[in-house]
Amino acid sequence: MPAESNRRAAGNFFLIRFALALMFAASASPVAAQAITSLQQLTQAVNSQQRVGRDVRLEVTVCAASRPAVGVLVVSDESGVELLELGDFGREIFPGERIRIQGWHSFFRKREMGVELTRWPLVENDGIHFRRTISANTTLKAGMVPLRLDWFNSLRDFTLEVSYSVANGSPINLTSNLFHAVVDETSGQTNFLPGLRAECYEGYWESVPDFELLQPVKRGLATNFDVGFRTRDERVGIRFAGYWNVPQDGQYNFRVRSDEGSLFFLGQPEVEVTRVGQTTVPAPQPGLYGETMKSLVERRWATLEGHVDFATKKGEGIEFDLHSDRDVIAVRVADAAGLEPARLRNAHIKVSGVGRALMTADQRLVLGKLFVASSKEVELVEESPGNKLSPLITSVSQVQGLRIEDARRALPVRLRGVVTDAKNTVYDRWMSLQDDTRG
Image 1 (cartoon, one colour):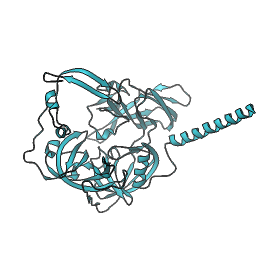
Image 2: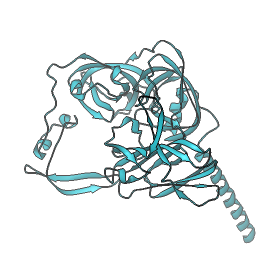
Image 3: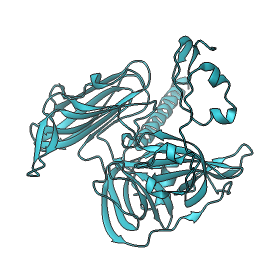
Image 4: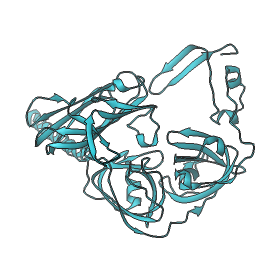
């Protein structure tokens, strides 16, 4: 009997492990069987998982668009509206266009403003983790192939290594045959020169950010995937982009070892965006402060009026609070080209974007956030004649003397003093500062 029980337990244990393996394989698979064909499906998918892999076939109407390099669209279809972060779509896209967005092995990620959509990376090694190696196989033809590698580090140690092997050969570090394209202005001919284009960014992230929405602190060329290009060790990210001259036809295995996360693309990372027609630009519906929303996944193409208390730059965009007499809505503009924060402060404006829900302290869902594609959707109804930059705060005593409502306004600060205590972890980041006025 004990032997029979042991055999049954072993069999059950095997079945459980087999079932778990199947579940893991299904969850790890980059492409699910059902394609995304509506914005409602897209929104629901990314709200159930942070990262989703599906085929995508969308036909949508453009409500608003950023500059091509910023890569943001507000689009609508019969099922709803959504803000999409597509990366550089290569040409100017105008409101009222009917476009088709399609891609096989597409990669969706939930972002603060909306949904980021790219092709599935060859190697997906994202997130906060220790040194970790992920590998993937692909078949390549000899010749130039586009590539891009996005990497970031949050705190402490950092690593980035890329290698490949052909068939069953030994791994080779991917440090050679790397190029960037330069177009001759006179002839229009494309020339390939050694090195990758590199851009360095600073910020704290827990996954690879959408670098298109950020401002690089450093641009240049790198001979390979060298994190020596970074400007600092922590809270930093780098995008490498260019071409690899594939030495021969064959089956290749790529390995990316990174700490923290990284995404490695071979081929163009952007999904295909095709113009299929023209229609009337969808009119945004007037929004109301404190308006009830049905759920956290509801999206509305809405327009609001109010006055701006404070405004501050954020990457390529601007953040500000939009006030009525009693309520406030947080607004973020993805592409703020031509619009400076100083011009917005104390002005009365009208702005259109994707409205989303916020849960109040009494558990009500109300319209509380508005995400905007570009400065073209921000209309200055009445600009403040005495609009001036907020005074610079230069002492600790000034900071401690701020009213709570002023402290929330993201006022400009430049302090010099002695750090008397500090803590810098993933969950806890602060310091104590002593100057001539106070501590």
